[in-house]
Figure 1 (spheres, rainbow, N blue to C red):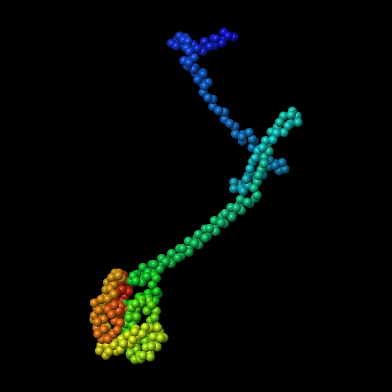
Figure 2 (figure 1 turned 90 degrees about the vertical axis):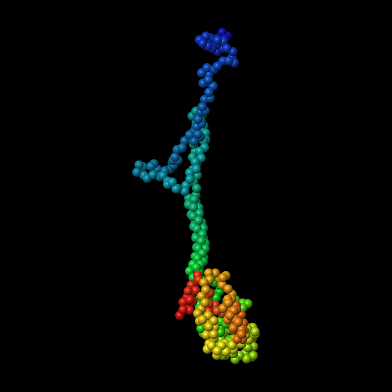
Length: 349
């Protein structure tokens, strides 16, 4: 026994160097190829999945008849609402014969209520459809408003009125711009009316004055200069009380009617007198912006001075320039406004 152990030890300590056996200490020994291979770790054994131990037979109903070769497949569609949850449990029962144990695999089939998933899906689709309808109706309203605004803007751009006419301008003021302002006037009654309205808009605005236009016509007998010139103090006071017109303004209108009668005697008509200052031709301007339109001109100052000399009241150069614009003695429509060419064509007739 001892000799065999010594042999093994000496054989382990002796190594061959250049064909000669050499005894080496334990620390200098080089492991042999066999020992190196033995030191390598062996690959771990693959773990068998639990599912491999459990057989996966299809559940067989004991009461169902055997399938015939001609019978149709009982395979359910992929989109079936049923889910089979298989839970396998291993129970051990002792056998009667040899006392051993036998593995029994029990299959539990869990089935959800029929139609529950389909009902939930239908409800989800219905909710999405309701949200889509709300979005469509909401966007439709916004789109309709935007389309209306776009149509208004297109119409406004198409006409390109003077810039003092905006989308917020009163319709009566817009109609006055589109139909009357800048149109040459040669009727004495209408010239007298415009003289009264331009004087009344001092300290006010054209929209407010135009809304009171019919009131002025009723109060001053349709601007018949002959009738207005005969107003007495009682009539003047009734106009102040009934129509709410300032007393000084009423007195000025009565005085101006008397001066118009004098002008008619000297020039034949008020129309001839007022148009004489422009040689019976309207002054055509070429303004591109309303900021460039002056509030008075040298021509309005000349007319104002002559009328003041004749006894007219409320006829400053600013009022007279406004009268010239309203009566078409000057065409101050912007060149981008279609009314500019229209009024120019009317003046040429």
